[in-house]
Amino acid sequence: MTLIIWALLLGVVMLITHNSRRFTFQGNTLNIVSYDLGRSINLTDRDGNHMTVIGSNVRSDASGTFTVTYLGETFRHTIYSQITRPSNFHVGGTPRELEPPLTGRRNAEISFIEGIRGTVLKGPIYYGSAWISMAISLPFLLLGVASIIFSEKFWTFRQKFQWHIKGGEPTEYGIFMVRLGGFVLIVATFIFSIVIIRYL
Image (cartoon, rainbow, N blue to C red; front, side):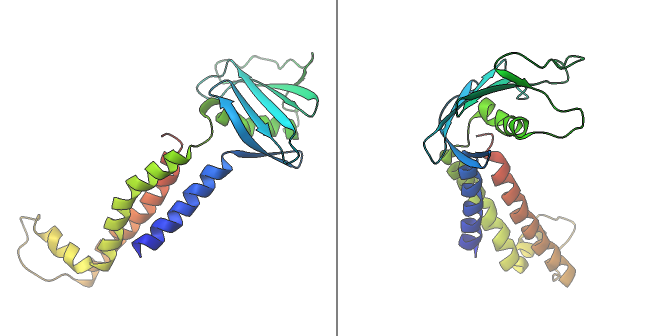
C-alpha cells in the first residue's frame, strides 16, 4: 500500500516538474532548453522557433522588466512590486511596451510574462529536486500507512509514554484517532513533497 501511495505521489511530483519546463503562448507549446538563472530563459516550440525571455532588475518577488522575443516580434512588460510601482504606467517605445488595461482584462502577452517570471527568477524545477523530495517523504508515508494498518500496536506504543495511564484497552475512538493521525500525516506528506520541490 505504501509503495502504491508513494508511486502515485511520485507521478504527481514528476508531472509538476515536467510542466514547470513547459509554457503556452498564442496556442504554441514551448519547452525550456536553457536558462541563465535570474536573467534569461530560452525556449523552443514544436516547429523549432526560438523564444528568448530576458529579465532585468528582477527582484526576489519576481518583479522587474521582462523582454520577450518570439517569431520576429519583441515586447516588454514591467511588473512592479509595491515598493517600485510608480503612480502611472508609461506605454510606448520600441520594443513594444505593455501595461495592464484599465478594464482589468489581461492580454495574452501580459499573462504569459506573469506566468513565466517566477521561472526566470528561480529556474525550472530540477528532476533531482523531485527525487530528493520523494526520498524525504518515504519515511513519513511509511509511518502514516503503518499507523493506519497497525493502529492497535501504535496505540499501545503511545501508552508507554503516558505516565498517568497504566494498562487498559484501546477504545474505538482511540483507534480512530490513531488512524486519523496516520491519514493526516499522509496528506501532509503529499503537500510537503509538492511544495518543497520548488525550494530545493
